Length: 134
Image 1: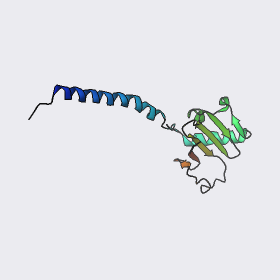
Image 2: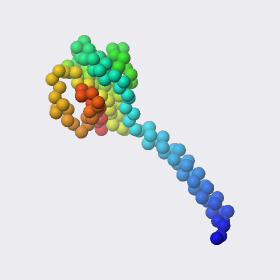
Image 3: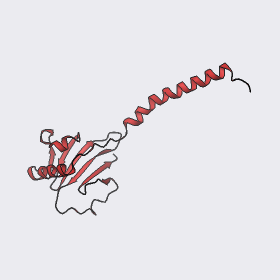
Image 4: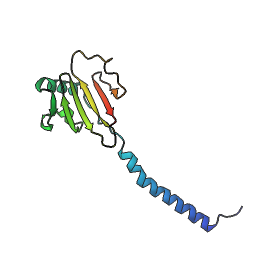
């Protein structure tokens, strides 16, 4: 069996180094674009604080000073309150989809109404993840 030539070994080594360098450059680009859902530690607390927001505030945006602790832990970009809904926007998108959470606080929630391909249920029946493509 013939030994591989020195030139072949150097060519293979350079090829592997180039592949490694390309991987180090490309991996962070694709990894940065992935959504990282924040962990909801206490769904019950999140729901009760969302209910308080809908009862205490008129419909509209809530300033960061008015965010309860369970919402603040999700690191939202903005929080919007409606009569029976709290929308937590974690990312507004840009070139990627926007995403966040919807918390339905009304007593008359019909899960059939929430069927939408952009909404994903969580372990709590009133908390949904949502994504939207701009």
